[in-house]
Amino acid sequence: MVTSPLLPPNQALAAPGKWPVVGERSPLEPTKTWALNITGLVAEPKSWNLSALKQLGEEDFIVDIHCVTRWSRLGVRFRGIPLKKVFDECAILPSANFLSFEARSERNHSTSLPLKEALSLNAIIAFEHEGEPLTESHGGPIRMVVPGKYFYKSVKWLEKIEILAEDKLGYWEAENGYHNIANPWEEQRYVVSHLSRKEVIKLFATKDFSNCDLLGIEAESQTLEGLNASKALLRNAMFRKANLQNACFDGANLSNAHLEGANLKDASFKNIDGQIADLEGADFRGADLRGAVFKNASLFGATFCAPTEAEDTWGPVLIDATTQFDQASLESLSFTPLQASYIEKKLKGNND
Ligand SMILES: Nc1nc2c(c(=O)[nH]1)N[C@H]1C(S)=C(S)[C@@H](COP(=O)(O)O)O[C@H]1N2
Ligand SMILES: [Mo]
Image 1 (cartoon, rainbow, N blue to C red):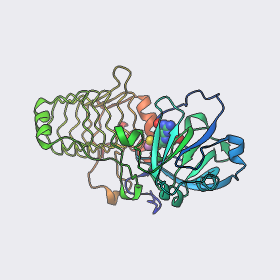
Image 2: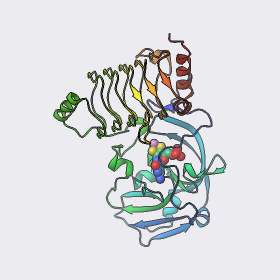
Image 3: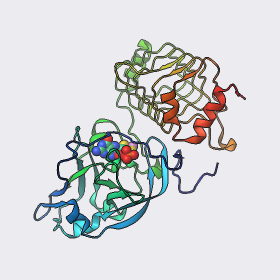
Image 4: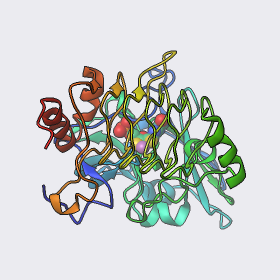
């Protein structure tokens, strides 16, 4: 495998032609007329319907997409209007510093950017992808595409841009610990745990993390055999070399968690109460997965092997006939072909 200088650290290419849907899958009231509203620090609020907006002058852009869950797509063609062109039509007040992008979606999804950065990165209000109108699940009919940031800074179903003096944290950034700067070259994925060391030690003793919000918890090399982490929020958790034998991660969110070299013998990653185990971007290199069960788990961007032998510092994942991946879990892994074929080979018994 060729590692591209265009690929930020710890990202992998999605399979050609594959584009995972991440986050919300549909907008609210898709058939209601779409308009882009500019509010806040402008001399006068503005509103464009889509055809008026397109008349400002559509252009083609080639963009690299980097999702925080570790998949990237390089050289993707979008068609739309540069944000700058829209702002040229608005008399933005001198006190303006930040932009809040808001979606017409059930949870009122939003994200923010500094005004200067949105312009210098050449943010795009996009309508088309590879010559076709954006599909609904990918933000059609109108979404942001912000090059040079993790993709969570690119709102789908854009309805409003609010121009602000102070930053207003977005959905992922305010409530879910996502990094507000989101520079993929600096790996600004998540902020760290809010728990004190004392609280963490107490929690380790109980071996019960169920339903807890433990974003970024530090548990490297900890002995947590039989841990109950059902429905726990463990994004970016550090479990390197931890003993997690028999642990239950049913319905847990382990996206971008570090599980390198962990003992995950007989661990469970199933769905529970309609909630799947989210393992997007999690790192399982060198882990012991004998007897582990993956059922309906989301494995977009998960890592089981290094891209090259030279980078293989963790050694092989241990998988045998007792390891179970169901079809749905394998399907989500198929977006990163190298990982999918590695697991397939292992499941066939080639465990060298
Ligand atoms: N309205 C809305 N926009 C959103 C999200 C969302 O959940 N709702 N998810 C964000 C995240 S985390 C990513 S990676 C991209 C995913 O876009 P895609 O589904 O087209 O791949 O959209 C971003 N924009
Ligand atoms: Mo994302």
